[in-house]
Length: 578
Image 1 (cartoon, rainbow, N blue to C red):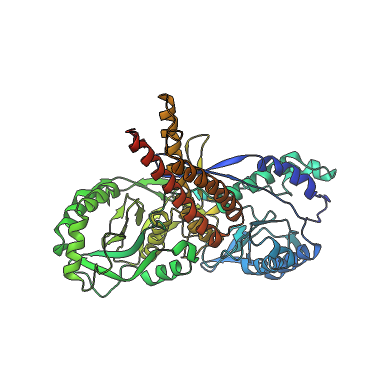
Image 2: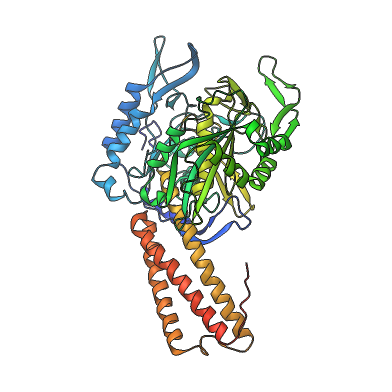
């Protein structure tokens, strides 16, 4: 609610009826980076709308009024913009979330749509309305915030704050501007609000915003099938490829900080995942294959930089960079040789390696060159490649901007955060919070609205931090990967049975009575297990869901074995269709 001159009011029942249209649509879970972008898992959002108590609206207004202050950048006042410490409002929202009503929805997701009164500030002798935005450490200013972990699955959006502008500097999609939020005191709604009429445009924009939050934060797309599978032991190791004159005692990244981040993941996300606390090093002159791969991947490109003083692009000299695809190909080809060299140069390396273990290597090259001309780390399906410059100065300017920062740039301090981002993509299949798959256009779409804080992803991220969205995705992606694999096995069995029937036979009818009985029992078990999994995953109860996923995997394997036995008995050839 917002008690402004217009006396505008949005009835929660009316909004719920419109959101029910979104609830009627089923969505397929999508993979961003895969040959097949669809998983055999469907999701459906069910929305409930509740009006917040008047006391919350009053408390938020007081928190904003008490916290609003002029914004200074490098000692200079930023004209026309006031900042509000995000903690002042988030404490109020969190207290509401932790109340009796909040606890009742703790297993699901809560989106708080706030519309407080515009705070008044003194401008000379006149009281004026302040354009304010929220601040958090040294990030860009924003008006959307999410709870810090899976115990606080809530997000709040302030429709009064702003507007703010951030996104690509020159070209590109996903830019956030005044049209990204359905702000009720915009002139385009003024005519309807003066008459107390619910604006259809406002209602549509609110529903669209709810849909975006659902797809980006509640149940986001999966980047890829996670490497850290629950059924396989996975060891994460850092391997530093150092220059010949490097200080071997100086670390190329803050690995301890990344280990701590992963350690705080829920147990369901870390099952059979082991993080090696030690980092291993090898010099270029001791690793010929590393040097060969490094030299083979060196390429050059020309780029331009924006001169803000003269407002023009300046063509720079050719920049050298590492082609990550070529480097990955070279490292993959000689990976066993590199592991052998590491055993010779690092005491104790490889003691945990065996046939039942998957090594998830993170190769960090000490070099001033970037990967693909703009990245410090790149995620692949079997490893992470990263670079770490020696200097702490600006490494590269990015073609992004925000209202607070004219220049977005990378420094060596960003190496750890970028490596963590790549580790989350490869190890747990976590997609960048600002990207999702669009099945209509068959491509990835970007919305930088979800790229500022509480995430290690994106050009605007400044620290290693996460929200409930990332922690839930770590467990959910592993669950969906195992469910997808089990359903794929069942689908293949069904395909083979249909193929046999198309040839005039019935494999199950011709099987023995014991096999037919076992097959029927496993079918009943599968149906019961899938029903239970649907309920448990709907309320994010991963702890109880994973035992049922194990049952699903074992049952699908058993059905496959029974089918193969029946086929072999009658000399039927089952084609391996991929």
